[in-house]
Length: 153
Image 1 (spheres, rainbow, N blue to C red):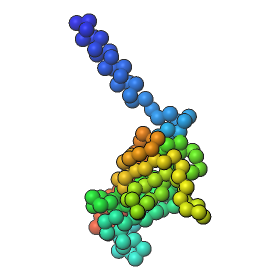
Image 2 (cartoon, helix red, strand yellow; image 1 turned 60 degrees about the horizontal axis):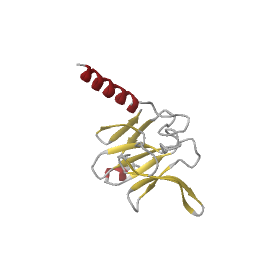
Image 3 (tube, rainbow, N blue to C red; image 1 turned 135 degrees about the vertical axis):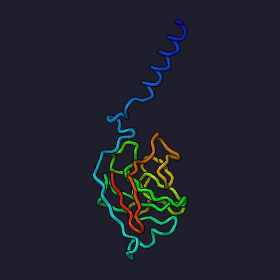
Image 4 (cartoon, rainbow, N blue to C red; image 1 turned 90 degrees about the horizontal axis):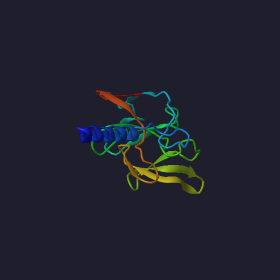
């Protein structure tokens, strides 16, 4: 009986330690919350391409550092925050879409080209692929009604 109590204690402690909140002091996985409310009518010329797989549009004035709305190759729409989850307080912790390798990457565009920040990369569905971060990018809800997409948090 004591052995079972010991095992239960070990499992409980391990579970509690693995559920620790993100460390806001180091910025690891912390992205400040910001309001997102986007309505996209894909019948309009500026959004018509979103009907095609692999197309995307960026909304600079939404979210923390902007929002990508991506029609992924799995035929699902994803709304992804453009703030990297690794040390998000750094000015360079921005997400850029790279069509050549079909990934999102952390860094900034400059006059001389792309400048990496933390070398984290993510898939078009926001999943972490490589780099020092350990978290997926923040996503927002996308609902579809006919040819209208609504993005909210």
